[in-house]
Image (cartoon, rainbow, N blue to C red; front, side, top):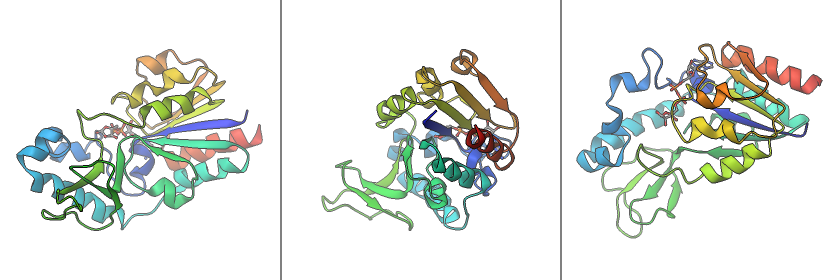
Length: 230
Ligand code: APR
């Protein structure tokens, strides 16, 4: 076994203090998703969208990676590890993982609304009037509902080469991310670490699925230990 692909969702960052989306008290509870995370919402009320992400960006600067993130770095001692995350936080980067694909974008980046290739590292608020050199308003570099997921092909290719897959902290509801496990044709083992595991259609077909119904900080170190001791 050489290559491990890790698919993470909001649950891997929950114990760092970042709300998930669909748990009780989750992020979507206080918001209409389409108002703050869709192109229509942006057209209707840009300020509300900017403020939604400004609040999340400010919080991100206050939190730290947890034992789940750090355990994944340990895996790199013995395996080639690719993290494919639905999360827009930078906690995998700060923990020290070396290969990370952000399917839904990155909270600490901003981009031009005229030319999507104009992208900036951006750790402060994005305000109305913050523009790119072409004069267009900057937006969060995040994939909104209804927008394309440019990294999905690369993520699928990575998953096809995996000898093992570890899925952590995702409700497996949002496609195309939730369907990636279908590409894990080569994987001898598939682990799913989540206190409330949600076995979607693709997972129900997965060969040799090991469900670890625990939190990321408890479950991920156990899976990592088993793989390192193999
Ligand atoms: N450790 C591990 N998993 C946890 C923890 C924890 N401490 N706490 C909660 N979870 C699990 C929940 O049981 C749930 O399965 O994390 C998952 C969170 O699910 P969602 O809130 O739906 O988050 P996610 O699956 O990442 O959402 C996918 O939806 O809204 C969009 O773009 C957004 O990337 C997001 C996508």
